[in-house]
Image (cartoon, rainbow, N blue to C red; front, side):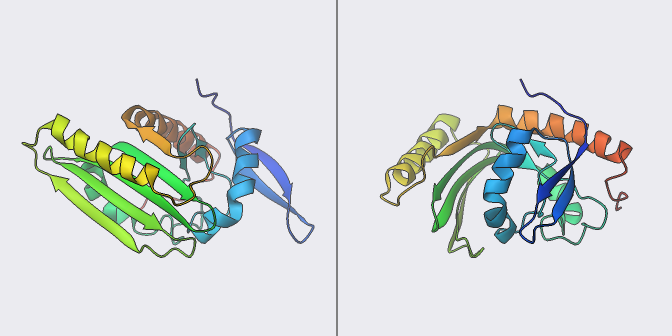
Length: 200
């Protein structure tokens, strides 16, 4: 069970010795975890502040005032109709410390097709691999999943020095929980005056 917390102000020591103040609604443990990954997340284009939502497998940031041009948020409003036609089903993520992150992203398209995508991201932000396979709507779901399982096993068994605890797996239920908590976080952030106005 996820414990919902209201937004609160916290101060953290910065590299220059001065305190940084953030408005957060995630737990102190989630803030500590974000601090450990702060430099890596910033290099990957995430906002330089704790997330607004942190579930056991997923994080999310809401576009605060003045952040709509940030790379994490830029273009998300124009891409929304397309994004709504894709339903996340399953994601597996492997980390090879200081080298790369490998992701397998399985999604459902609005017409019933299944989309399987493999992405390799370097810490620099480069994507040397980004391959997509689309299974038509009339494909046998069991055959599709068998192919995806073979892909998952091949990546998992590759001698690439994955970090401990990998892969991180997120399923459809996790995405539903994230959506529900993002809605609550958005309402709370609007009530606290933290969110930018709607862009139409």
